[in-house]
Length: 296
Image (tube, rainbow, N blue to C red; front, side):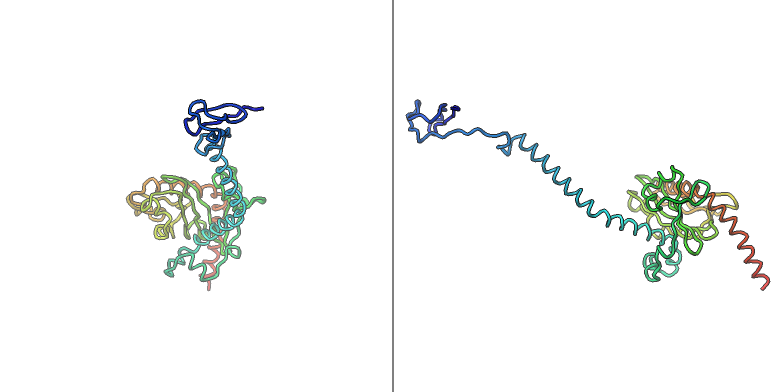
């Protein structure tokens, strides 16, 4: 039979045996004053280190599982929201100038006129030669635009009126900056731009995401004659000789401004084969239209 332990409640004497003694050998207390000492399990004490470690581990696992389930259940909705946000940004880059002329926010202008991305825009993917290729989802490529560029895949959005929207990606002072630049049918004039950032300084670099700042890009040119120059942000203000290709940099936001300049140049550069080919095609069409008008 296993040995048990009994403790005297009067003097604390510990007795080992099958049962409590008839009386305590130290203080003479009867057997009724003895309490059997039960062995405690490893996790019986909630203040013990093993208990705390196991409890914490279980809670972490349970919470992680709950978050994973929630994430999976909301995945489709999250993707739909992200997709809708991208589509709205593309449309806003196209209609920013018209909205400003009507003293409206671009989103309100688009909504009021019932303009739909799906009805107005066609997403295509180009190769490094500016040729359209099949097999890739433009919005999947936007999830990792730097990676898509590195793979030689360049998503482009073509409006039914001949304008195009080029996605932009770069780095600001504190993290990624990105956006969409819309070009008129001449593939040269900026129709509008929408930009966003991950963590630029409020009141300084973060100004790139405001409609007021983005409005300065409307009407700028990305070509000087046949030379590609993009649009840059110039510290101290755009110069008279480059007024068509420069925007005033953000005061106090030099690093972000430099990042935006690099983003625009580096992103647009990938699309030069397409833009130059369509500029060439546009020139005879414009010339014919001008000749026809002169003979009326």
